[in-house]
Image (cartoon, rainbow, N blue to C red):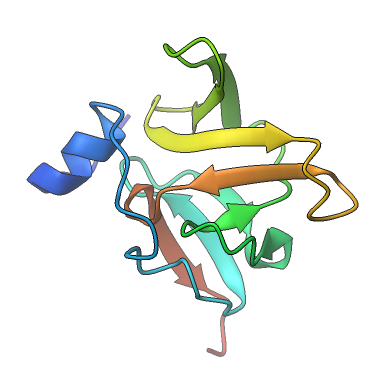
Length: 122
């Protein structure tokens, strides 16, 4: 598996399971049509049609691309971490039951863990 070279800040979040500051990521308030892929291995993770504004400071999605995201218990024992199912890159956390969308799921993802690929024609 080919992995992209990461900057020190990307490595801090993606490899060492850090978090970017809220409202600072490039995809927080970004709603163009396309696909979001893993910054480390470029596996497609989310479709733009599943992104919504949760006003939490990080990109939010209510559904992942089937099989692309793995859920694991967070070390804090309270939350559920999400990571790329292919390379294990830390994406963020998933929260259930908040009522933001009919799917009742919020994937709270660090922008730095993603790369956006626009739909053709954009």
